[in-house]
Image (cartoon, rainbow, N blue to C red; front, side, top):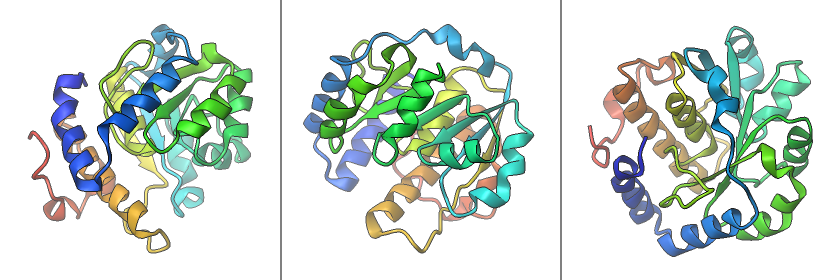
Length: 229
């Protein structure tokens, strides 16, 4: 995913949520000031791999076998803790630092890479937490236009960003666990973000000529008006 392809979708997300682009850019610059370029060769194991994308939804614990059957697991936010507690290795954590910064610290000290995301709402967390991570093990990301060392692989929520990242690094197949688009326990904002995650995964599967099973029975109801299909 290059930024020119991502940019119109990003603009649609900003309009839909009323998010200011400038806040994302400020967060990106704050992250850039605290990180270094990430060595992409460390993610070469994703090329040709069957990669599981673990969301942090209520179904996660019941679906752990999906992760066990994969070549590599990319985990969104607190899904990392659940997987590790079950003895499942996480190859990459994807997070905007909103819930479990201690886990990020632990992983970076263990040399497990973490994709740390900057957006307009997490500037205080970037300033407070990022200096406590081992920076060589941080892959800095943004949803705005990237400026080195911060990168943009596409995606909006932690989970769909993980899927776009796996795609960028050449994953052969994507499988999913812990994704609950209709989770009734979440608030209105989270539900809206889940709707966007669903749209973005639909766009990604079209780009990959792949069918993601978590979208089965849902495709006809997905609003694709903002997607460059």
